[in-house]
Image (cartoon, rainbow, N blue to C red):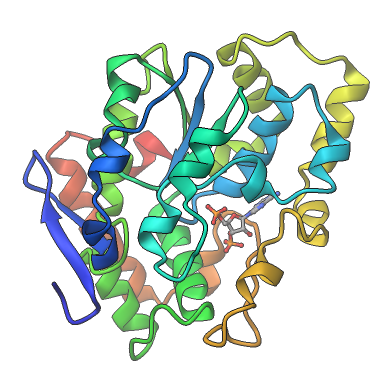
Length: 299
Ligand code: A3P
């Protein structure tokens, strides 16, 4: 257990996985043995890769574009965060039980890396959507998030970058998380997409996702409405998708905290110093070298 209260475990490939201690205490076997259904869809990401954006999109596709419900109920109620009650001790709701009780078709969110996800996902090849985002934007977004909600209380941004690289934050290692799914990207039950692709051409991503989910294609008018609903501004303006309000309920949250922050590709360009960029690029190159890959092969 590190001084930040996180437990670091090695997975089967001897890579680090950091999780809050409470996660271990609350028996991850419950997650491992989680019972899945034929029509379940999972949305899996490393934090800050565009999870909420994809959840909103996938939920709408799976629910015949029910904009009424999307505009009147929280995204996190419609699509439950599987392990949330295990990583946030103050959360009274049992999220695993809530998933068990949810009507089908379920869209279940998780940030767990592949080795820690429910075993049945792999046994029964459950449909899984994976969203990846480039590491430099993730480090910036994760810093603002964890600092904003008062979970990370380190010295300065420089030390956060080190914590990110040395897996001293929840769900790290970032690269191990991403690479497992990238390598599975051609499996029939895996939909691998990047935040960057969603920003560049959301319509194509939607069409690809419809195919993956075996749904009928949308007419032009419905597609327009969906694209409009999913815009950054629209999701920022809705309290049902912008989690700022919900997350501001704890005393630790900073006044300037924003969940829907910038929503752009490349925010690192004006938020990281040259030295921080270089450090992250070297770290990335070293990890990917083992797989004979470059960052540009993925993003
Ligand atoms: P930034 O902090 O860079 O702004 P997650 O849902 O995985 O926590 O990811 C949050 C990130 O996705 C934040 O990134 C947030 O602004 C961005 N995001 C959320 N909804 C978005 C949307 N509709 N369009 C673009 N980016 C969005």
